[in-house]
Length: 187
Image (tube, rainbow, N blue to C red; front, side):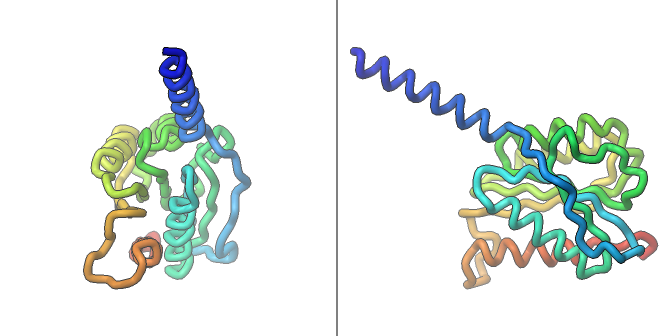
């Protein structure tokens, strides 16, 4: 009987710790890519997640934006992330599927009215992302944002069954191509 109680206590504590880690804000400085561009500025705000997958996908998307001529400012979804979007032409938000990433949801709510701001959404997961994409799209649209791209990439489920490369490599390439596809203002 004491073995069962100990197992329940360990399970509850481990679950609480995991939930805390998944929903905890991660504070980071703003990293600027392509600082000399004056064609358009994108703010990329993401929650890195438990593995490096989402962070790498976000960086690949940002690299795609840069190759398209964008100036990109990147940071994590925290209380220190910019909330004045007046100097940005594009907002990119994203995170892993769980919660659908509570730090992202809290960040979008802090922004208030997006005033029609063009917004791209990046969600990553093991293979089931439909609910998370729908939740974040609803948050952005509810804040009067204009969703110009909503993308889900998977760590376990194939992103492109016809591509023989490792799934992670395919996901990063797809993120880069998606970033390249976001038009600069006036295009």
